[in-house]
Each structure stands twice: as C-alpha cells, then as structure tokens.
Amino acid sequence: MTDFAKLIPFAERLGIDITEATAERVHGRVDWAADLTTTGGSLHGGLLMALADTTGAVCAFLNLPDGAQGATTIESKTNFLRGVREGHVVASSKPLHAGRRVIVVETELRDAAEKLIAKVTQTQAVL
Image (cartoon, rainbow, N blue to C red; front, side, top):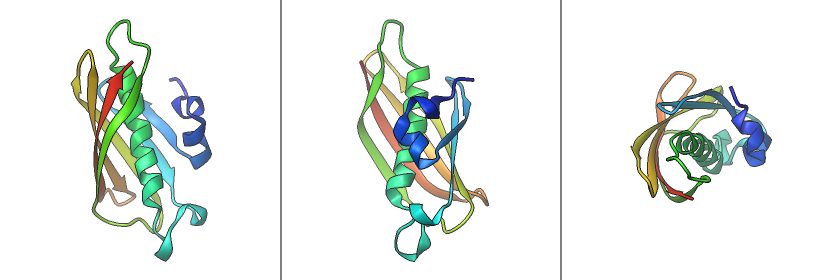
C-alpha cells in the first residue's frame, strides 16, 4: 500500500497514519499526545479536522475520474460530539458521491472505545 501520509508532509508531521486505503474506504489514525491538546487535555479540534481532511483527501484521490490530476477541499463541515483525552482517534472515510467535477466524502472519527467523536462531510473539487 502507498504510504499516503508520507506524501502529505503536514499529515506526517502531525503523526497521522493511513492504515487502510481503498476507493470504498480509507482509515487513518492519530495517537493522543500532550503537545497536540488544547485546554483540559483534549486533542485539538484542528488536529481532528486535519485527520479527517487527510483521510477524505486520500478517499477523493482514490475516486478520481479518468484524466483528473488531483482534488482539493472546497468545503468541510465538522460536528464535534466529544473530546478525546487519551488513547487514539480513528478516521473512517467513504465516498458519498464521486462525480466528474466534485467528490463528496463522509468521515467518522471514533476514539479508542469506538465512541463517535466527530462527523465530517467534505467536498473536493476535481482538478
């Protein structure tokens, strides 16, 4: 499998690891670390959004139509449901729509106990 996180330097710096990548589903993971938290020791929301954006981007890439050169996020909506103060977070992205001009991806973020911590819907423009 391609090491997608290494192709995205920002994701690699944050410690994001892509653990599965197919056109139907992309899984990624990031571990809790004190230097990635905000007040109260919860993982920073920006980190969680970066995790979802990374797995969503890989999902979009794997669903590109023939002749496309890539994709870029043009809209992202995140609903945070709970904080994460230990363990890790797993992202699971799946395509909702893979068209010629846009790809819409839905991502669920779950903690180590598999509780839903955030839901993200993102739209990627096909380049």
